[in-house]
Amino acid sequence: MTNARQDVCNFNPGPAALPDEVLQQAQAELLNWGGCGLSVLEMSHRSKEYEGIQARAEEALRQLLDIPDDYRVLFLQGGASLQFAMVPMNFLPSGGVADYVLTGSWSEKALQDAQRLGQPRVAASTKEGGYRTIPSWRDLQPAPGSAYVHITSNNTIEGTQWQDLAHGLTVPVVADMSSDIASRPFRVADYHLIYAGAQKNIGPSGVTVVLVRESWLQQAEEIANQRNLPTMLRYAIHAKNKSLYNTPPTFAVYLVGLVAEWSLRQGGLSAMAERNRAKANLIYEAIDQSHGFYQGVAEPSCRSLMNITFRLADAELEAKFLQEAKTRGLIGLGGHRSVGGMRASLYNAVPYEACVRLREFMDDFRHRFS
Image 1 (tube, one colour):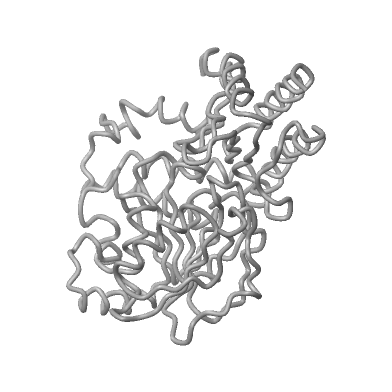
Image 2 (cartoon, rainbow, N blue to C red):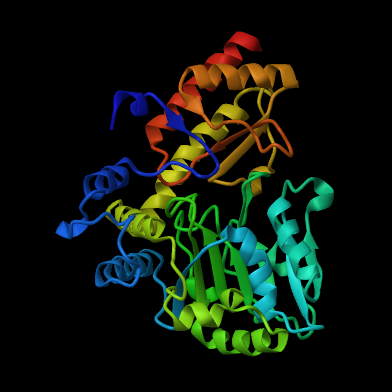
């Protein structure tokens, strides 16, 4: 990579940092993938070459996430936002009940789409406290006959995260893992369906990965028929056609495979979790040891390892912080437009050295302005 890239530390919340190794490999293969004389960008999605690329991406994901054989891996489009609608369209019967756990802005949006399609209820919410915490699994009591429980495992805007993904519920559980999938070990088998926009930890924007228990797809097909859903909104159609019913985001799928293989080379999910905790600890220490100069948003017991949110005493000082950070090559640190403040996103591909640079800047800024 060029010196200009080395001078920049990318803390963007998504699309986010990709591993240098992956970008270099994609660059080397851009004009002539596998000696076939074509770029992945221009080859037919019906070709044997692309089918091999997609199969390789799926296999790498299966190894990385330890996906059971009875789960289908789908490469879809529309981001997590489309999944907000597709999940209730396919799994919430007309007039049926589903449970939603509200822990931030994205879970609110998921609930809003479900409200257009059925009778979702709020099983738990931390909204009253400003979404600074995560509820306990023990406090969740799904409604009788609930079709599923929906959670958002990591909240990018608020900077909170479910610390324990082992729920013990008997009701099917659906998880939006867009911003922390592949960042730590978890059991796919604990969830009937997992969806994730790839642009945080597993690839570029443009593709959404869905892991769905195969036995649940039959129920989805029955509900989709009852609702007379359009073809493209049916999970069963995409599964039957191996994510090739229409033209998939071919280059994005290719990059998902490269990122998954890179993650495996780094040591897999356990190694990722260790690295991510070390990176986050650097920044949380800067906040906690600042004597109130930096004010963390999330409660310490619910802090995200992916998105660290914090504030300063006033908006003018925050603006100065962001301006100075950018001049030092620390980009993407502004909080979400809906809440302001600062946010450092420390996804898998963000190197430890970038976090060291951010920590040094935070300490220096505090010494100059406290």
